[in-house]
Structure formats: structure tokens, C-alpha cells
Length: 254
Image (cartoon, rainbow, N blue to C red; front, side, top):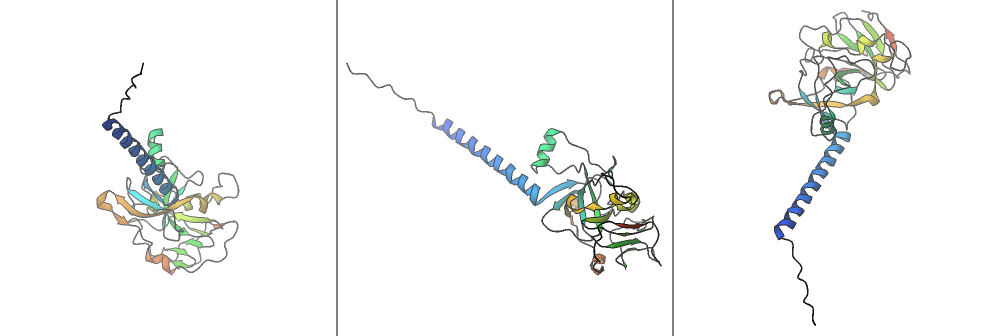
């Protein structure tokens, strides 16, 4: 007696096609998330401006692109992690929930800026920063800064007088809206998060700098490139950077 072979049912072509399309879609999404995460970690990311400390250069709610590939320099607008005790409620961005944080990490949402600050880099390691000369101008290595192009209208370069030498591996930063900025000046008597000498907390470690802001991309009517003001190009080279900062809360010789 001959057995009749059992017929094998073939899967409908449209089902196998849908499965293949679904697999391809998942691979594309996963690949895009990986690429976006890598770009965010090593190339650049977007931040939301949380405070008034950089007005009118940057307004609350502006979205800025921060790039991480090039070294920072005087005059750059830089984003950095809180060096310790700088952030108040008004300057710290609102922390997102776990889902929002995931989309931040993979680069699909702009960083809420929680735990970060944004200021203008005024002094590099070894620079002598002082306020102020006989005309009320901030000085770096003896060269007065002409800050009219970015300083908030009506603000003085600084309401407090000081003379500092920036130590090795750190920078001195100030907001463009000086009267609303809790920047390096206001921490000149503070110790760092791990203790140390008074004034240590005023200087931002370079390894805490996330990158430099290069573009305002949103709102659309504020799209603009963030260039280094010309006044920073005339600053003389600094001397050797000391291991510890030199700080005096007195005006420089006029």
C-alpha cells in the first residue's frame, strides 16, 4: 500500500513580506538610535536655555546646538556641568522623567539642561582677569574688553571688583546678563565641593565643559550663529598657569 505524501501548506506571501518589512523597520530604528546616541556623546547635542543669565544673547527657552569636537577658547559660549554649588532652582533646567530622559540620551529630545549651566568663557588657564579699568571695563591680561555687542543693555561689566589669575586646568566664566548671573565672580570666596581654599569653586574644571554653543536653532525667528566677539581677538597670551588661583577682591591699579 502506497502512502500519499502529506501536502505542506505554504505561508501566504503577504505575511512573510510583512514580517520582513517589520524586521527591516526595527533594524532601521535601532540603527538610527545608536547613531544618534553616538553623535550626542561625541559630536554635539541640543540644550534648552533655562535661565536669564545669558540674555540677550540667549533667551529662556532657546534651543542651542553645542558641539564637542573643538577646543574651547576665550569668548566662546560654553555649556558645563555644575562645578559644585552653583545651581539654584532658577538656573537648573527641569528634570525629565525616565521616558523623557531616554529620548534625551538617544538625542531625540533637546537636553533639559538639568545639572548644567551656560556662560561666556572669559579667562583661560594663566589669564589675569580684573575689574575694572578707569573706564569701567573688564580686563584680561591687561587688555580691556569692549563688551557692548553682547553685554545686557544697562548692565555694568561687573558690580564687584576683583583681580584673579586662572589656575591650570580651569576657566573663568561670566554670564552676558551680569546682574542676573551667578557666575565665577560670585563664588570667589567659596570653597570647592571637596573643600580646599576659598575661591576654588569659582573656576570651572575644563573636564566639566560639555562643549561650546554654536547655533541658536529654535525659535525659528531667533536662528543665529554664536560667534566669538572680536574684542577677544586682541587679548595677549597668558603667562604660566599656577596650580592654585590668585584672588584679590580689590580693584586693579588705575
